Length: 265
DNA sequence: GTCCATGTTCTTTA
DNA sequence: CTAAAGAACATGGA
Image 1 (cartoon, rainbow, N blue to C red):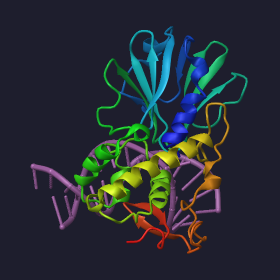
Image 2 (cartoon, rainbow, N blue to C red; image 1 turned 120 degrees about the horizontal axis):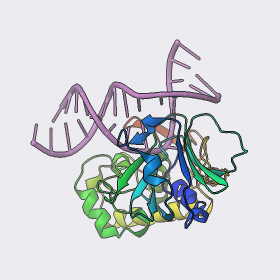
Image 3 (cartoon, helix red, strand yellow; image 1 turned 45 degrees about the vertical axis):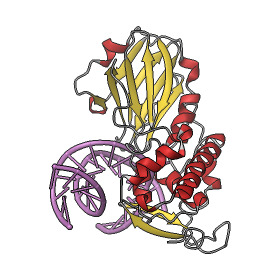
């Protein structure tokens, strides 16, 4: 579920906890924590939350002790601010008690998790942030790989924050076929792609992300951008530009959607 | 029973 | 050796 727009929307809807104290931590399932065996309860309890920010698809919490921890939502993760009286949804693995509220982490598939990173950097392996990326930097990075552009853009070490939805949408907006090798794109195409990535992400942010099934913000609200997808999961439906049926192929184990006319091979 | 899913990481292959 | 493709992880819904 959660790519940059969804994770940023969660972060935005969590700003009310900044400055507040974590009174206690309940760990209901230890295996979502890393490193294994870390004592979250004593590390985080009685600490104030200084800031909550996003980097790539990770949410980073800075505590007044100077330590940080990160939460990754994986595919089905939910991070919600709730009253203790509200029933716990299934697969709730961790609860941060913040005054009379609870910050709850639930994740059915458990591809997500919570990592104590202390004072180390959260982003060693992450590529640049797409919203501030310069076309020249994107061009340099794409020129270093011969993979299909779709697979290159999914690589978090090349560019951070994009996933299957927004790569398909950005490639459509840029008129680029997903199978074209990354190093075969010219400077004008890369510049257009860079602009398309930003445009698609900003529009998605404005609509609070895409909810296919599981995604909710911290207040439990779904996003609305799924209604505005041009290609993602629109197989056989007419292209918004030319009416040609949208095609789906399998690439890197993921479904990939594109318009065969607007995105020529 | 089958296939599919917004993600990442480890293993295998070329 | 490296780059890229494939499998694995765990759960639920169609």
